[in-house]
Every structure is written in structure tokens, then in C-alpha cells.
Length: 173
Image (cartoon, rainbow, N blue to C red; front, side, top):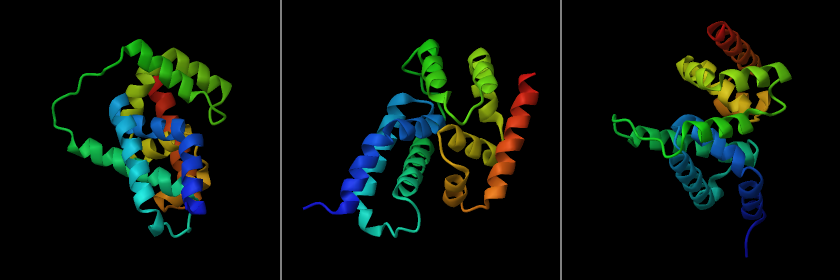
């Protein structure tokens, strides 16, 4: 018989799957690798569910496992460039579809649509602290969740988001 936590984990797998795919893709920039990282994360979470202490939300815990699996996959890559398996147009459509969220203002969505390729390049050039919090926020995470997951104060998260947006706006002009 399954425990309540296993059922909750299965429910999260259904409801948060697109979010976890976006989080993994933003780190890996490869759809198949992102899909594999999310699958590996779900398997690992299922095996290690007994270690979940309940200090954070189960979704936050699972999200951190997704990020860890994506980073591990990234580390295992060789230095040679991996050819993308989808066209630039398909990638742009997915990015635009995933980026439109309550996190972005209408003006930011228009900017994103007009400059998505350039924006993607600039986001990757941000320092890691700014890039990570912006990606997590764009993936739909709340400031509180980001702070908890990264183990930093909420004010620091807000400052990094604000500063990252300002840097991007300056680079885009």
C-alpha cells in the first residue's frame, strides 16, 4: 500500500511536470536531456522519499532534486557542443509559451516576444546568483520558495531579481 507522501509525490509529478521540465531545460538547453533529468529526479525522489524531513514543501524538495539532476547531467557533458535536436523556431515558441506567466508584466512579455533569442543569450551571461533567481522566478516559483531552496533571505532574492532585470534591460537597449 502506498503512503500518503507517495501519492502526493505522484500528484506533484502530474501537476508540476511542465514546471520541472522548464527548470531543467533552462539549465541544459536540450529537450531530451531535460526530460531525462526530470525523469531521473522523479526516480530519485521516489527512492529517497523516506529521507524527506518535511522542513520544506514537497514541491520545493522535488524541485531541488530536479535542479541537482540537471546540474549533474550538465557536469557529465563533454566540452564539445551538443547539436540541438529542434529548430530555433520551435525553441523560441516553447520559450515564449513558457515565459508567459503571472510573473511577467505585459510589457515584459512584449519585450520577450521581440527579443527572445537575444534575451536568452543575455540571461546566460548574467552572474550565477542573478541568473538562478531569475530563472526560478520565471519558472513560477514564489520569492519565499526561492529563498528557502537557495537558503538565502527573501530580501536577497528580491534584490537579485530586481538587479538581474535591470542588467537585462540595460543590455537589451
